[in-house]
Image (cartoon, rainbow, N blue to C red; front, side, top):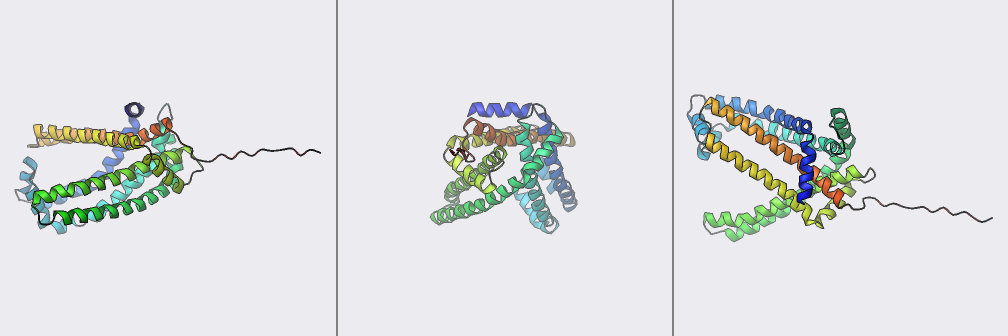
Length: 297
């Protein structure tokens, strides 16, 4: 498992243009929300000291009170965030084919990347629909666990309630992670086989990772690396802080470096799935051999 992860990281490290392009795409999408959100925030804060308090030392109570008072100004951002979220999801689905193809190429080239992305997008999009339906089923199932544990915690203290909510949250996280892993391996299977249908890839991916817990462990190992990156960022933020224009700018640069690192790890999940499948392949399509016999005269 470590060998596969190391191989995947090395493959991506040799294609920095790929990582930078995907980082830049995510940055542009985030700025479409961040800039108008920030301007609205400044306009609503006006002469209030709330902004200064949040910059120097983030306070959740001040944050929630501020948004409660200014909820009408920020309400239009909800459909915008939802729309950009869908665009981001579709872009990730579109670029997945290019990412898988790039690992087979000695040198990364944008024309080849976009050609591969367009080639597999239709089948990957159909797989995404099946995954979404399956996710809704699992989320509904996880909701039942929330009701069960909430009923058990009823009458207890706030601390007891939080502790009882941990199991259903972990169950929900596992379900979501399982669907994400299915998506990675389903796309790998569609990439490997031109005749496999998206529905067939959905079921084969389910069976494949259900029988191979190390595939799930590999995914969560990459997630843990991402969590470690976030912890390191928070540590740097606590040391530098954002007390002036200079420190805010420095922290912005540090933040973007860590976003670039998370983009790298996100690509790693798809590439690692490809390398794992190549190390432990299964039959994706049945090969029918037709024997021709000659009739004796």
